Amino acid sequence: MSSRSPVRVRFAPSPTGFLHVGGARTALFNWLFARKHGGTFVLRVEDTDQSRNTEEAVQVIYDGLQWLGLEWNEGPLVGGDHGPYFQSQRHAIYERYLKRLLDGGHLYDDAGATRFRSPRQTVVVDDAVCGHIEFDMSNPATHPDMTIRRPDGSWIFHFVNVVDDIEMKISHVIRGEDHLSNTPKHVELYNVLGVKPPVFAHIPLILKRDGKGKMSKRDEGSSVNSYREGGYVPEAVRNYLCLLGWSPKDNREKLDIEEVVQLFDLDKINRRNAAFDLDKCFWLNGQYIAQMPMSRFRELCVPVLQADGILFEALGEAHLENVLGLVKEKIKLITEVGPWTRPLFTEDFPFDDTAVEKTLKPAGTAARLRELASKLNRVTDWSHDPIEAAFKELAAAAGVKPALYIHPARIALSGRAVGPGLYQMMIVLGKDRVLARLEKAAAMAG
Ligand code: GLU
Image 1 (cartoon, protein in one colour):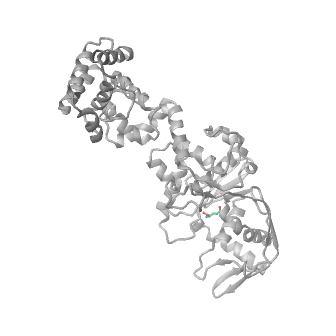
Image 2 (tube, rainbow, N blue to C red; image 1 turned 45 degrees about the vertical axis):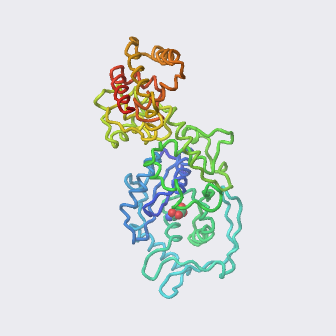
């Protein structure tokens, strides 16, 4: 890909079987930076710890990145000129670099482990986010010589990470701030290997919502998978992740990803740690759902309806779109689409016990539902205004509030106290089904 710029960045996860939002945010910032500069985004799997079941764990990473739309230009599945992209397959390369260090006199044996002799000089890092930092490496008590290879022959992270960044021609290392303290060790390796270090950009940590401590695996919303399963929309989650450590410097929060690509740069990343706010992500999700095109909404809802066993196809495409149109601006999670729309596709829908007790059981309800049915039976133009007028006339004639007809009707038609607009629901259901359900609910009301 000769048309690409020299910008080469990478996401280098260890396959733990879990893609943390922090990792996803790191991947996203790398992806944004590559997109912004027409560069290359590399995926490299740091699987030197062979004790894990890598295949499944790696799949979790692919799934999470693909779900968020963070396609990589080089790496597993897509290939590239700098592979293999699994550290477990790069032993020969590491051996070669090890020999260079050995020949340069930088290594020594320590009870079978191979260690790197620190030059014990001050290391300067001009971090694109954290600024100019001088690391005083003179004290072996606080900065012991790093191990490069364990006695069992396995490699230590620092060494293989640096070798791979060199071999993969990485120009910018964008990663979590938890790696800032490792950076002087990495720079020492670059120096003795005679390679100019990449630009480092350490992005702020993601803290728990209360700002107390780093977000951990146990915190709600920490796994990318939990969003997919929980009915979140990838573009909303991606938008939310953009705001964790970056902002457009005005107060906007919902931003098109192409605009983020245009506005993004390393010097705009905040130095302050970002506090994770699942409520904001949830709010954004609702905004995305409400504003997305119907075709996208349909695409997201269909698998969820299928998983819920709702036979939405039987009533035709136009009915499906009508139904989805009723809920699109109301639901906040895609997973809500099943419970919200089931009554619009089938007679086999559940009745909420509390709603039945509260709204159908009170005395007089059965009679009112039957009154309503006979009134609606006389509505010839089955559209919003005549239906609304029927409710009003009925209530006025009985000298009660329309709510006494409206609430029981809602339970009768959907089994639930919350849902799409009542009159809209009645139009989509059609008169016959509405009348039948009102009769059925009148019987339930006793
Ligand atoms: N495998 C390391 C991690 O997951 C990569 C660190 C880096 O990006 O250099 O933290």
